[in-house]
Amino acid sequence: MTIATALRSIPRGIVVTGSILVLAMLAACNTETVTQDIRPAVTVGDSMAATDPAAQPGEPTQSANALAPAQTAAPAASAGLAPSDAVTFLPVVGPPQSAVNRLSAAVRNSARTNALTIVPNDQPGARYQVKGYFSALDDGSGTRFVFIWDILDAQGRNLHRISGEERTTKRGADPWAVIDQTVIDRMVSRTMISLRGWMESRA
Image (cartoon, rainbow, N blue to C red):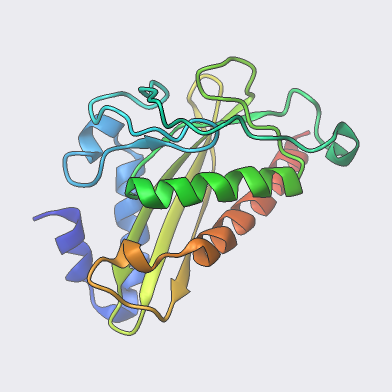
């Protein structure tokens, strides 16, 4: 049974909890394991190229369609965070490339709004690593976008988790096709606000 099939078998009333549990189990695995059942991992943030499904987290394969580096906010807007409080985004698990492209744009925009510095994951200097796990599923009356972001230190140790879900009343044969930029922007905004708050609590 695939992960997608397992999620569809969960009763509607507990589908979100069940999805988060499945994503949490994925988060406990390495990228090589989880991509046997879902789409290949891809890099979010500064380099949004598809990666080798067998690649380990933090070791993405770059391609010609990598996005331009993210722009960061002016230092004056970063009160509460030190210049060294930069983050890097590891390969994400779950979404197709089309959704990852939208996710990348949302991350860059929200990082500027929240004065967070993003370091390309093939460069040193990030204090924290962020890895995302995502699922889109039809719940019978709409489509749910479930997410988990794991925050790790530079050595890969888990420090914090941000999770939740967004919902749209749109439905389609492919749930990912109805997860539009508005839904992704809401999720990323919530994530960045939560991430910044957590980082400030550790500053």
